[in-house]
Length: 394
Image 1 (tube, rainbow, N blue to C red):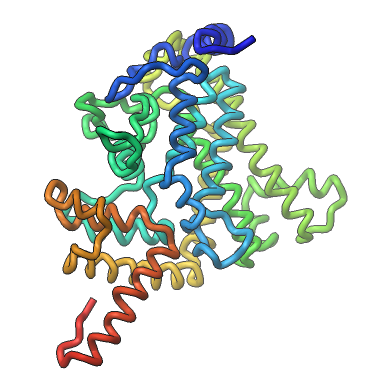
Image 2 (image 1 turned 135 degrees about the vertical axis):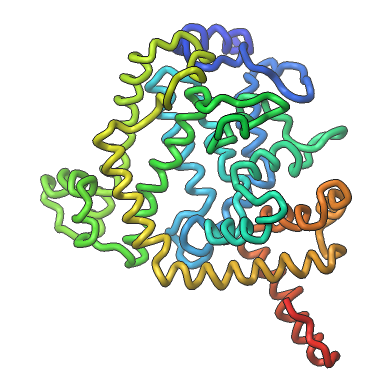
């Protein structure tokens, strides 16, 4: 006995809420394909992302702490896996399409540069007069154009729903996909993936900050949300500041946030009266959200992390040096486009050398970017200084 595609469609009709996105109602792909006998389109898209080179490279890209600086710090890959797990839980509990929410979550960081947010900020500055840089738009470019898998076209040929779910920060008529203006609020599965991203980094950045010694119990106890998170650890008789106490408290922190988001989102969905996935885009606000109480507390946590982790002098110092090297590498490629990879060179005439170089660098892992810097900038500069009276400046 087999579970075939028609069985998957019947299962969706039976198990999903009326406002969930269904595979059978997908807007399809840019390049039409024959349906798979055993997998739905969103399941196929998930697998295409998992098998992509861009996904594998996330293992060696910085989340907050420079890749390779510690065995237990999150990377873009481990962050992505945690986001996908939270997204599945939220979607399942709310009777939404788990496969779609997970797929968007797995692809959401494919466009990040090396060296974390510091690398992205530097790339934004380098392209300020040339269209800018945004990792969400870059993720869409990765799956639409930069991955090479098929004989007659570039990209992974993902479904419209997955691709549109990658477009965040929508602002009126500025968000467009395939010529269509996107609504301010996407379907619920995309909203789930977006909030799951916030949930994941709130929790794991506290965890990594503690592991790095940038945070401690005394600092965190100024936060109302943390004071709630530690209550079960205190009730269990765990010694404050011990490894077990802190790990259990981080676990509780994430669980509290997920639980609040699920319960409040369920209330919002019920109150909205949405009866189909298309109704969601006409709502005045997001339907996947924290309660007002938790929105306030998570906002405080967000600000706390920016002050004490993301912009901590130790983190900023190391990431600034790495970003300087990325910029030097960018300038070398601009001056010497023959040094770019084959695919990047093939796109130069169409997108320009700056954009081709930016796309090439954005796809690099931290270690590849650093090795390229050493090969083309530092070592190359030393050689040029030995043989030239006009040193090459980068």
